Amino acid sequence: MKLSVMQENLARGLSIVSRAVSSRSSLPVLANVLLRTEDAGLKLTATNLEIGITSWVPGRIDTEGALTVPARLLTDVVAGLPAGERVDLEVENGTTLLVRAGRFQTHLRGIDADEFPVIPSAGERPTTRISQKVLRRALSEVTFAAASDEARPILTGVLTKFSGDRVTLAAADNYRIAVTTIEVLLPVEDASLVVPARSYTELMRVLADTDDPVDIMLAPARSQVIFHVDTIDLVSRLIDGQFPNYQQVVPSTHSTRVVVDREDLLKAVRLSALIAAGAANVVKLRIGEEGSAGITIAAAADVGDAEGEVEATLEGDAVTVAFNARYLIEALQNMDAERLALELNGPLSSGVFRPTDESDYVHVIMPVRTPS
Image 1 (cartoon, one colour):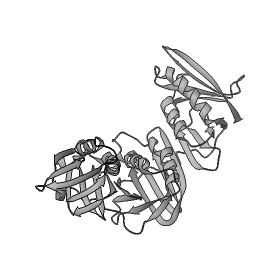
Image 2 (spheres, rainbow, N blue to C red):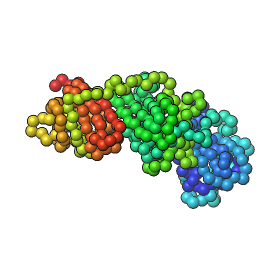
Image 3 (tube, rainbow, N blue to C red):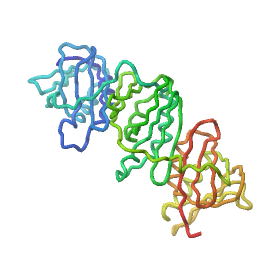
Image 4 (cartoon, helix red, strand yellow):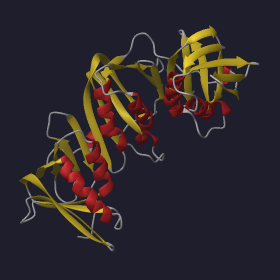
């Protein structure tokens, strides 16, 4: 293999695929990045067997070939080369890569490309398409709610349910649920899959704030899903199992509804959370309290106490409810809405957050039981 690429293009491609490199694996080749000449350029691929990322870098090919080399080392070497320089890559003696730019050159020992796992690539016809901007926003509103504990693997994923021209994304752990529904650009047959939240987190890094589409392809065996954007493929395994029926947990009625500015509530919760950190991270929301113009957010601990008030519009009964401050903050900072409604059915009911605009988003947080 012998080819030439520009330093900035190679550095960008390596920074993208290196997110999928395995840091802890018994297979040494998974710590490597696969370099293969393809389509008049260089194809870079990395995988940790859960997620695989491929990026194409334009270049001039002199000799076809392939080799895997340590991903982190190659990324650091290329990043240290002068910007704007042409980088020459050449395989010597079968398993050694020569990296040369101007007066700098480095030899890296690699592993044969045949030992690298096979990563499927995007086909010509996608299963469906979604606006990058729309999908990126939707993922940011749900993925953080997925469980990080591997005790229930199904909850570490995001339910992705296609139906006609819509797709519903849902994530949950034992204390919260986030659900949103968005439109697809290409109608699709009904399909339900669970994608690891970690895969979606990496996909968000790839998606741009544009209406250009991301192509989505389901592998024939329904064990993997492929996302294609411009010169990048992201392949993710799917999680086997039945995702819980989250719809049963979302209350359909409420006795209290309060509408509030999201940023104002977020600031107030963050301030109370500083005190709540010393008392199991619990903050109380007193809604409709006599003499208050809206919601009072309070926290108390051995280190002190805090209280703040946010203007809000109340419908229904006054109520006081306690929540985990971290769950409140994560919900509020990831919600894409200026104003939101909080719906409750008493002090021990789940809190249901909905944007007041027309978006199909709902976030449910379980309450915390307190002595008073």
